[in-house]
Amino acid sequence: MRVTFALSYEKMTRNINRKQEDIDRLSTAFATGKRLQAQHDDPLAWSRVMGLKQDLREFEAFQANINFARGWNEVTENALNQLTDALTDAKNIAIDAVDGLTDRDIHVQAVNGIMKQIEGLAATAYRDRFIFNGLWPTDPSAAEPPFTLQVNTTTGDVEDVTHNLYSGGSFTPESLQRVEVRVGKNRSLPQTVSTTAREVFYDDSDAGDPPSNILNCLLDLKTALANGDTAAIQTALGTLDNFQMQLSKVSATVGSRLATLETQNNALANLKIEHQSLISDTEEADMAELITQLSMKQTALEVGLRVTSMLNELNLLNFL
Image (cartoon, rainbow, N blue to C red; front, side, top):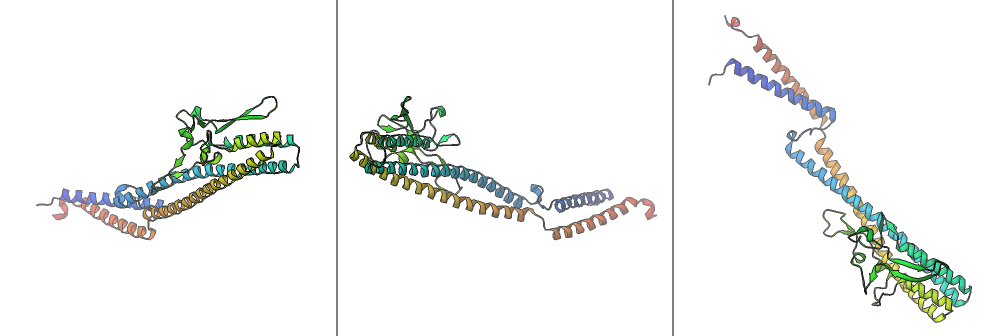
């Protein structure tokens, strides 16, 4: 095939434009420090970087879930500690009453105060959700704390306990479910966040209607104190001991959960560092190599421009 002057000139022009594009790309990489500016720079590396960045977004979502779970469990742990302290105070009152060390009315009022304190602790909320109420019901406005005390408006005396999560011989389904979050892509099961009122305030081994619970135990203690019934006070004291042991087990579970969340958070933090390092290694340019390539491309461009200039000067008179 005959190669015409026009075809040679066009081919040379295309080569010059391509070299100019290469120089522009290398100059941009040198200025930004990144060799990957677009997918066509290195499709395989670009795909790898996109996958790593997607992983980073997932890690951040998991860490947000972990922060939520940690906050919830820290609030739960604090509430459980206060519950344990409140039961200790009630036990001390019972012991004083048995020993006859304090006036009966003072005992009764002290237990009244403890019951109101526990009612408040049972209604502890985290981000507008009751921590001991499992999942919200279908209608969020229907959510209720586990207990409501019936208090005499005149005397301030606690007279009864309403079990908001228990009726008709059973607990509401929402009160038995747990709030759960995912804390890792390779976790086969979600990480449990919440602790139910059933396992905190009620005796799991009791099949009563309602089952034995902390507030009714304190109500019985208050009645026994008012009546000076030593045997009933001793019975309530034993029940309070059992509930303290139950709270201790629940607290241990929450503490273990917090430790697991902390371990998972640290693992995700390490994975983020590794991924960011891989992204940096893949995206960032080798400056020494860039300078070499840029120098070679500029030299080739200058040669191409000279040749093209010589072709532009050629005319028929040169051959006469």
